[in-house]
Length: 335
Image (tube, rainbow, N blue to C red; front, side, top):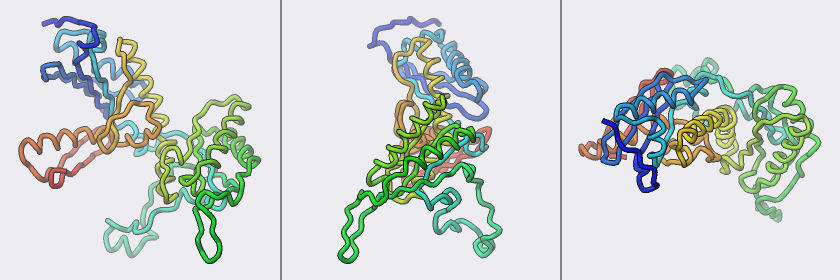
């Protein structure tokens, strides 16, 4: 039965949410009365707007609406999935270039302490046989830059406040490194300097120089500072976040922008939203997009938590079997 298609803002009460997996793209269309329909389409990683369109059209057709009607009536449009996770697992992310504080060029292959946790006794005793995941960046594309921001020193009679510039950033080295990275055909440049979480001035200056050189060479690629995506202590963890952002997130952002353009072309007036790995919702312009790494599985986990609460279940195991990965979530003591 066909449904009327009012267009006043007060009538935008439909909720559209999609989960783009490695095999299928599923659309859930929630109507004002709480009922819902489900649409499906084959996932096309090379053309996500097409999968979005087909899945949404399938859901709309079940209640007698056209895809244009749904987008005019839609208050919220959420798009999440395993695209970023699959990019990392399959190793088909962007070619990354990295500028680091000189002397720390090997940081990309360093791992955290206690990395033997979860291994068997034999594996723990024979670490040389342990298989390590390949780095997300070619070591040849890592360039050291002379610079140093202090994290603070209070030993003896020496008192250097946090953020004190010990060595100014060597701008000539930055320019030379960017030219080399352009010649190496990198698709995104990351910047990680020590103690940038205290004062990002060196990273931001290096980013400005990167944009100047890129403009001179007629190249348009993203430049990402670690202080902007993960302003936290411990440079090893900050690097992992930066690499996820550079290697996968910026590539996924392009796909999300294409999906948003598709939705707006059908009359949707808002911004496309996606799920954070810890359950929040943000629009796709969110600068720390790497935080949506498991935006697909987390949606199912939140739904399972809701059902567990209604059934008064304390501990629940959830599983999401996709075309690329098998994701497991735990609800312990209803959390």
